[in-house]
Image 1 (cartoon, rainbow, N blue to C red):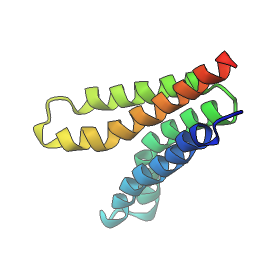
Image 2 (cartoon, rainbow, N blue to C red):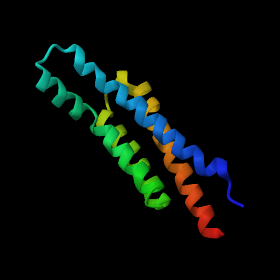
Image 3 (tube, rainbow, N blue to C red):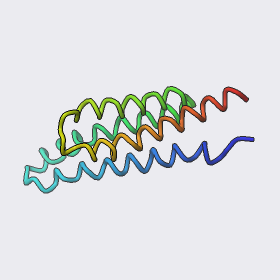
Image 4 (cartoon, one colour):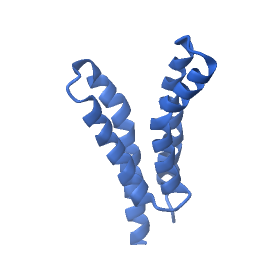
Amino acid sequence: MKNKYLIWTPRILGILFAVFISLFAFDVFVEGYAWYQTIAGFLIHLIPTYFVVIALLIAWKFKKELIGGIIYILLGIFYIIMVWGKAELKIAMLIISGPVFIIGILFIINSLLEKKK
């Protein structure tokens, strides 16, 4: 019997995390740029969300949970490397990378358990 909690938890967390990091893109609307610059800036600020959604699609829709989990972990490592050395961002590293690592690990665990069956 499949563990429905292990199947759905990383998917729901992936969606919630994508929504969470998308919220940071809305800061471009208060900068006072022209409408076309604002839209371009908004789309650029959504680039991290695109990567998170792509990893979620690979893991969920393409049934490649192991690959999706590895991508999530790599995204977390990439973020840590990007902000490394910025002392004021240590909590940000935890807030951003922590959930990404958890999602990746849950996808990998689910993939490995499915292969055992």
